[in-house]
Amino acid sequence: MEKEIIAFLDTEKIVDLQSVQSKNNLKEIYFDNSKESLEVIRHSCAHLMAQAIKILYPEAKFFVGPVIEDGFYYDFRVDSKINEEDLIKIEKKMKELVESKIEIGKYEISKKEALQKFQNDDLKQEVLLRIPDGQVSIYTQGDFEDLCRGPHVPNTKFLRFFKLTRVAGAYLGGDEKREMLTRIYGTAFADKESLKEYLTIIEEAKKRDHRKLGTELKLFTFDDEIGGGLPIWLSNGARLRSKLEQMLYRAHRIRGYEPVRGPELLKADAWKISGHYDNYKENMYFTQIDEQEYGIKPMNCVGHIKVYQSDIRSYRDLPLKFFEYGVVHRHEKSGVLHGLLRVREFTQDDAHIFCMPSQIKDQVLEILNFVDGLMKFFNFTYEMEISTRPQKAIGDLEIWDIATNALKEALDEKGLKYGIDEGGGAFYGPKIDIKITDALKRKWQCGTIQVDFNLPNRFKLEYTDTDNEKKQPVMLHRAILGSFERFIGILTEHSAGEFPFSIAPTAVGIIPISNNHISYAQEINDMLLKLGVDCEIYDKNESLNKKIRIAEKQKLPMILVLGDEELEKRSVALRDRRAKEQRNLSLNDFITLIKEKISEVYF
Image (cartoon, rainbow, N blue to C red):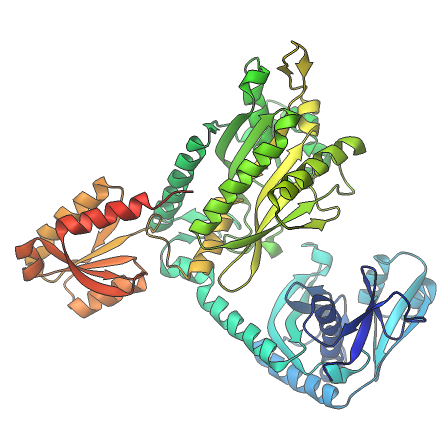
């Protein structure tokens, strides 16, 4: 069965077996776990789920059921309240349909005919509104049929290895003002082993969920009285974040970046010049001050442009590198908010480099070296993707070509592999996206490098060249983490809350066995604080084992146990979580060890 062909690849488009007139110049897609094959399998499995739902809930009406990165979902309306327990019932019916080996067919009708055919189905009418005029395709399997562009496998027998993962609510068309539909997520693979591996990762991901760990480790919280998407950092989280900021601050200064800071509120006129007003307004917050419109910044670039304009610039000054931990606000729909990963207020590790066109390649390569060191420090692997001009963009096509080619040349010279995301660039310039892979093999988009000829032109930026003529600099937008919020959320899940020693909210837990050892514990605490290492003394009137369990639950990198022997010898009994060892050290040797760990931080 593994050798069976389920579809064909026509250049970049996957087509059904049923759609093929001639096999010339077509790549065969076999039933396996290739990207193209999984797209067909998962698309088909979404319809299999919809068919099962229709049998179990005859009144159900369906909206859309797309393939997503790790599976599929379907949005639908049903009279009953569907919960997690109902997924078992739906899965059982799906398996029955698989065993029935139902042929999957396809036919086409005009959009006008489709509107007539589904005249009593308001959700299908919504789907048809999003489809251009012309022919539309309908897929059938048994008594079930639905609008779909496909492609699909030829028979339900190919859909044995699936799992429905969760049920959620989803606004119709993503519009918060419209009705809430039911959404069921699922996934599917070509073999049992791959499905089992994926489900194991899903279970591990639940344990590592940064929202769960954030509560257990007392890192952050959210409060409805404050508002959705507005994180509140508790002291543990604030310590973690501050250490990360300080570490990056030093790294930026070593690389010649200058710290700057722009206001969080700018006149709307500045956003009109930048192009944000016309191209990004729906994502911004605006207010009136003295009968004049102001916009809260969604990005830091305009403030840094004003820093550049604060002085006369020469070619000798370039490149100029400005960085800022800039707080920005972006309007996100409540339905997409997700812990620290999707918020309305966040802080970017933002930098802008103003340089001559001839300096672009070297600056991009220097940024990539910075990225490489940082990702290795946190044990992330990563890949890169160049995003080109989107449909909604500013600037001449020629300028876009120059900028895009500069990025490609830098990566090519370095011998780095990269993908191309056609049309995925920012509205003002092409970019390199850095996508990291975590411990659970999930990919996250974090850092970015964007080449921008447009904003310097819009704000009339200048520098004096060697021939004493005025020239326009290039502006590179650059973030490595992306935002502190999102990166900390990802890092929490990647490390399962076991943060590197250098940024751990509490790096050392100190456990005095009795009250006689508290003063020694305090002495060690004070010594470590002077080194910038945060500690916690567990001095409550509890058993030693309970104190150790409490400290271990906080995932502390190191725990010190102090008793009579340690006090007498001025030593410590060290439990090192990362090294997974216990040993006794003199206090002096322990302090030396701590200094070594602090000095290990470099990138």
